[in-house]
Amino acid sequence: MALSIAEIILISLFINYLFKYIKIPGLVGMLLLGIIFGPYVLNLLSPDVIQISSDLRMIALIVILLRAGFELNKDTLNKVGKQVLFLSFIPALFEGTAIAFLGPYFLHLTFLESAILGAILSAVSPAVVVPLMIKFIEEKKGTKKGIPSLVLAASSIDDVFVIVIYSVLIGMYLGHKVSIVWKLVSIPISIVVGIAVGLIIGWILYKLFEKYNPRATKRLLIILSLSIILVRVEPLMENVIPFAALLAVMAIGFIILEKRERFAHELSLKLGKLWVFAEIILFVLVGAQVNIKVALSTGASAVILIFLALIARSIGTYLCVLGSNLNLKERIFVVISYIPKATVQAAIGGAPLIAMRMAGVNTRPGEIILAVAVLSILLTAPIGAWAITLYGDKFLEVKVAETSRDKVPLVPTPGMVPASDPGN
Image (tube, rainbow, N blue to C red):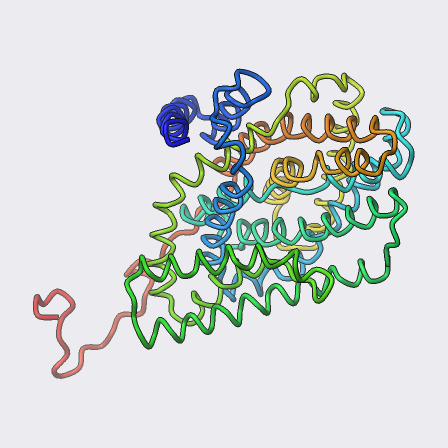
């Protein structure tokens, strides 16, 4: 396993450099590397790595969501709050509804089977979107209007909504007793409880860090460990009180940033270094989940369906930002940012097939759902990542830092030490 990871790192670093040199995001190359090296093409990855890939991907996702939390400040969220709420469910609703109605025609599925497919496909990928938004935040592109923070926050909540809808639909399909009202009510509950849990844990950690002042590395290890525990506890608490663990992870970073900015910047710097490794693991192993043969078996009908569903999604996304202070180019950027699919589709794309097999029902719909989910990753993750980078670099306004000429000059007072004084 160690040898396989070493090979992944070396080849990924080279691929990352090569793709950036030709003006394509490095993560696109890593995704393609994972597909080619994965068990469905050349099968060059160690079986041990494949076996623990879900845990490795989860840790890598936690790293990037923690970084996201350390980049979200209260003022920016207040600025984009209404749009975050709309973007968290309306685009997914538009896309999922379109697939539910078009699926019977293009893929010969029933309406309910098509709705299940729609729930899986309508999730945006935080694994692809969040790193790119953090990059824009660091480069101060679009930050004047909080555009990267808007997409970053909304895309993370979007997944909570989609997964809950999926669980309702698959339960109905398999004849399980599902309380639809409870499931729908659990969406806002899980979001609120997840954020509350993260804020409480973050506040406690802030107090402990203030009192004992451990090194930044130890602080990071504590936060990472607690975040992993939160993600593992989430499914165990589902029937007691639902909470969105990934939102809790982001909220930890958010409250530490609000309470002690220095701590947040130190931890964000450490996470930035760790992300160099985590990024490789995340995207290569997401790519390794893609069964390209299954994806290609669905044919042109699935491609057309995905394309039409993306049009519906884009309409929903554009409507969400229509009343905002964003100009036309910035609104188009938000629409483009909601294209990539990878994380949820790789995680639960095969779940309906497994559930149908265990229930002893016809598995053909599950095979089609898996194939289309995989195809959606192949089509949207690389193209979406490339389009976000290209369009964002060209059209997002760079926030100009305040210069000394913009500030009101101070009137010297007796005893004031000049800023240039070495003793200051």
